Image (cartoon, rainbow, N blue to C red; front, side, top):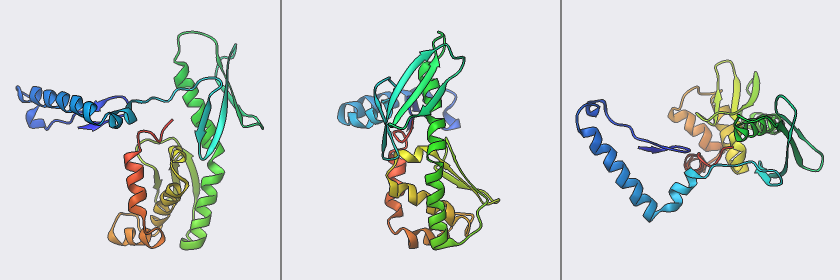
Length: 218
C-alpha cells in the first residue's frame, strides 16, 4: 500500500484477485489508515494538503516569494507575467465551467520552468566543469512526477521543476546525480562511488526527496 497525493493505492497480488481474500486486504487497509490517522495524523496531513492559488497570497518556490495577483478577464486562455515588484500577474477567463485551480497551477508551472531554467543550467555547468568535463547536449527543466531528473544517451539532462521546492543543496545533489550518468549510465557501485566522492551525504538528500515527494509539488 502507498499514499498518493489525494488517495491511497492498495496493491494486491494477482493470486488474491479472485475470492474473498481481497476483501480482507481492503478491511486491513481501512483499519491501518484509521489507526494511522489517530496516532500520526501529521503523516496523512502531509499528503492530503492540496495547494490552492488565491489572489493576494504568496507563492514560495526556489527560495523566493511571489505575490499572486489573479484577475478574471474576457481572455480566452490564461496569461501569466512576472512584474518587477515580485508580483505574478495572472489573468484567467471569467467564463464558467472549467477548473480554475487546474489552469492556475498549469500557468504557474510554466512560469517556474522558464524562470528557473537559467539557474538549473548554471548549476549543471558549474558541477560539470568542476568534476566531470563532459559534453552536454542540452539542459531542460520540465514538470515531471515520475523522477527528479534524467540523463539520456544523447547527453540530454532533464530535471523536474518540482525540485525547486527542495533545499538548494538537494537540487545540487540531483544535478550531480545526473551528471554522473555521463560517466556511468547505470546505478552500479561505481556510479554511486562517483556521486559519494562529490557529495558524501547523498543518501540523506535522497531520503529528503523520498519523504517529501508529495509536498515538493505545485
